[in-house]
Image (cartoon, rainbow, N blue to C red; front, top):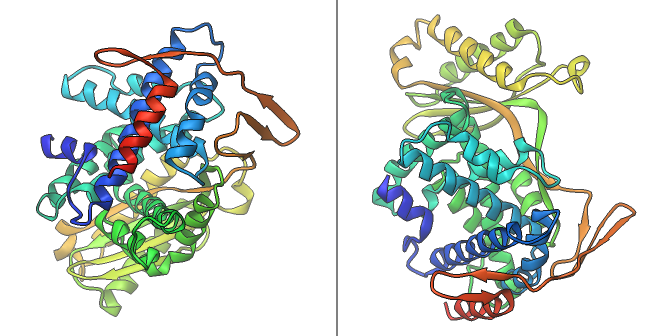
Length: 388
């Protein structure tokens, strides 16, 4: 756990310092938000979230020029909630999930949207050194399981989704650095692919269109929201290489599970990897007649995982590898542009035809040894970031 916590803070994993610079920025933004939230909670503001946003928007526009401020704000709120959750787990507290709910309630985000962003905070493998990667992968998985109500069958599918989102963030960050004339790699797609693989993702080239779409939206300053699709992602890791017979058997097991469950259409292969183990990723679309009717994807995912595992167990050709087989399913989740149009650094937000003007108040944000107004903290943050 100690190495995991260190990696979530600041790592020296990249010799060029770019990874460290990125983590310092994110940590600074998170700290800024925490202090703004605490200050707004003590003020007479009726909407603590909007109060905090109004206080940090201009600062974020300086630190993250070109990036929609609320993307960073939502991640910072999720990081704050994850810190509370992690502290609760370390102290062996009870009902640690309630700590998350207290930190992410309110605002215009659903609880599930914000909970998914909290899960993204648990994925820190790309921040770990190569020697610690396996430990970080394991501990990330443990945290994802805890955040999924103890359901281990959702872990790997969720990991693959988050790896794609983090790849898009890295690719976009690279493009923004190039736009700002900050030294960066010439190939930003490869930068994203590197982060994708370090977070356990496989089949990057097969899902690169989705990653590129997310990266482009972020680079263009669009607001991104967590979006749940009416389908399941299924990931099967099998402890042998992907021979034609093995691939067919796995596909048949998934297709049979979908037919048995009767809620889903035909399985679609999304990605494949063939290294020390055969890894396949599928999508199961919900049947048209069930769309928009509140289908319980959490239960559906668990049901499908169990059925696929049973179908593989019944195949005598593959049974000897079952000890190294993992079947995981989770509702398809990604990041997409929202319908909200905002300007980074502005104090006015437009959603459709509704315009809300934010009036700024002089709110004091307490530090450890003295109090600073946000304007002073902004200058300090900006100076630190540009000195890296």
